Image 1 (cartoon, one colour):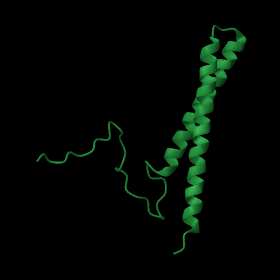
Image 2 (tube, one colour; image 1 turned 180 degrees about the vertical axis):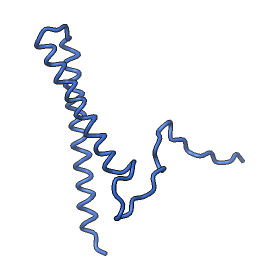
Image 3 (cartoon, one colour; image 1 turned 60 degrees about the vertical axis):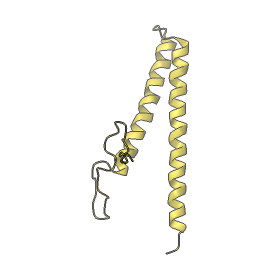
Length: 101
């Protein structure tokens, strides 16, 4: 019988390497705050890229219509996904707060 091989993370770094944060600790790398800031930053970056693409298209600077629409849709989908994740996090928090101890 072959031994069981460990599961590979497929190149994802940082998973399981940060200790859990206790209530007295603040600002540890890899925490929820940094994950949230990274997600907000990527959504904001896509929004900015879409805005620049629209401005270049309207100014006639050689931007294609299909690339402008794709950039706009990409930003819209990223925002929608971020909002759905936010809604799930809020829902999970509310569920935890309703638990009886």
